[in-house]
Image 1 (tube, rainbow, N blue to C red):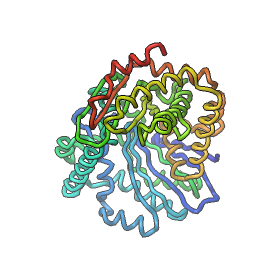
Image 2 (tube, helix red, strand yellow):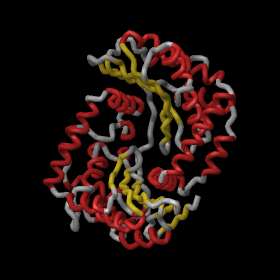
Image 3 (cartoon, rainbow, N blue to C red):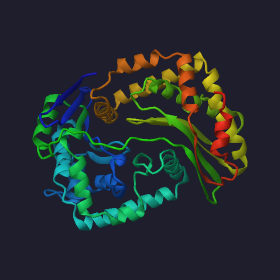
Image 4 (cartoon, rainbow, N blue to C red):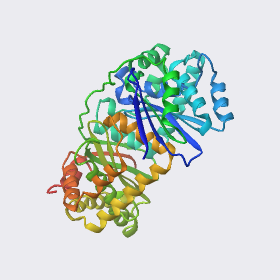
Length: 421
């Protein structure tokens, strides 16, 4: 890797990874603030701000922005997550200055035109409606809200229809002033770029970014667990059962990532083999572990017909418990190999690489090397994976379900089935 980092006097950080064999570049701006940085009356504001960034600046209309980047063959997009917001572009190598100019323009010179604001709020209301009509998305919103009740980290990123409808320009400006500043911002680029060129362009074009060195502050997460279900007339029950995971800096983080892979990360995983292949109880089932800055969430998702719910959940819970007691060397080797392939695949994609180095710089204050990450994975043994799996399965369960949910076991039933782990 050829990662280079510069921190400007303003606190703005620029990180690049040159991939000279490529003809394109991916670059973007990552802000260390997302939905969990919102106050109760700001729920959904970070996502709305992300949408509004493309709706016109003092120099460019919304149409100008779209036409200018696409006339160069590039594309422009953005994303809001729980702890970050990102704005990024993919262009030919020679158009990196254009991409940075547009990104700087939308982040420092947006006008937030009232007409555009009303139209975009309508778009987001449609987006919220789409989630409500998509049970495999909605169940994860229910899961987060139950795991972290009445907390920003547990709230859906999109917000609610009522709050989004009520937001005005003043609310957007206040959130922007509080969270969008040099100390919370990373500019990342990967592909056919040189560090000096990106650094110099960023220094010039992002001079209008407010100068603060403080990091965005959010409330500490408090995992509670719980049980929530929504009865709907659907062909399938959509179920997420989870437990308290660990933050990305925790000593057990990689062990739990491997545990999640072993129990539900692929076609050879225990959940897939037992629930789908051996018993035919579900078409879709997978496990996950999400690490945040101060907490994590581990769990599995499954979708199945009403008649199979009563059998599927105990079988799946037993798969988790048995893995914490009996997973073996062959499973560990497969999981390690899969994780390494994922890491290497990210190195081959400039977009994935730019996102990776930006997020690592925000999270750790540095970029982790491939050798460092693979060494941590290679050092794991069966005993560590079992202990890490048992650690999370001892936490209070969270159960979320939508559809024909009458036979979904309660939180207490799930906990009792894992007693003794």
